[in-house]
Structure formats: structure tokens, C-alpha cells
Length: 136
Image 1 (cartoon, helix red, strand yellow):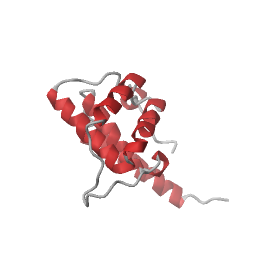
Image 2 (tube, rainbow, N blue to C red):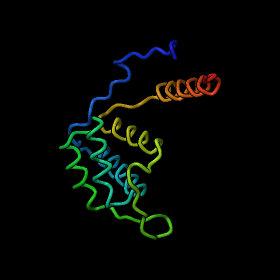
Image 3 (spheres, rainbow, N blue to C red):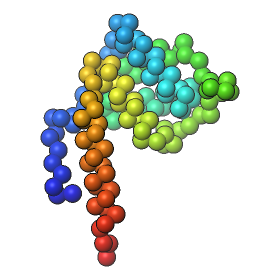
Image 4 (cartoon, one colour):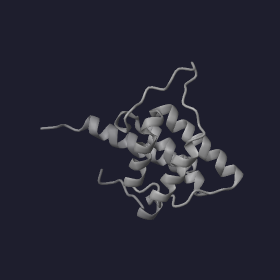
């Protein structure tokens, strides 16, 4: 991993501090909240948003507004049955990455395909090196 160089500014994520009120971003908010509720259930929505506050992706004020927005979103899956509640520790990393993409969109920033491909490439290289490493 010595040859992996990371530009700190490129990877720094500033938290979503306020919830925008324009129509396009309201749609993004609703889609994101539906995504989270579908993944973890309504009872765990506050917990997962707390996790995003803890890791610095959103502010506490943004979390409160998101919970307010979620009141109008139903909880059911494609079959019409209630979504089983999942703890945030049971969510796969791809769900958290999807949330990060929603957050960036709400901030008016896009994680471009090059950025996402770069992360994926770096992770694949690390995995290959670990698989080939001879542990003593």
C-alpha cells in the first residue's frame, strides 16, 4: 500500500448542514429517505441518520429536518409487507455509499464517475495485494 497516494482535499467530505428547499432537491430528499426506510425500516431511520451525524456526513440540524420530512413517507416493500427493521450494523457498505451520493447531490455536488471508479480501483488493488501477501 506504500504506492497509494491520496490527495486529502479531494477526499474530504464536508457535512450537509442544511436541507435545501428547491423542488429538485426535495425530490432527492424524498428518494433518499425512501431508500433508507426501505433498507432499515422507519424505526431505525433516526439511528442511521445519527450514524451519518457521527461520521460527519450530515449535521444534527440536517438530521432533524430529514426526520421531519420522513413523516410523509410510507414503509413498505414491493410486496406490500412491512420492511423488516435492520440495525445500521447490518447494512452493506454499498447502501452507505449510496447515501453519500444522495448527500453530495443535496449539497449541489456530484461524485463523478471518475471519482467512484478511482475508489473502486484502489480497493481492488488493495484486495489483490492482501490476497497475494504471504503472512508469516
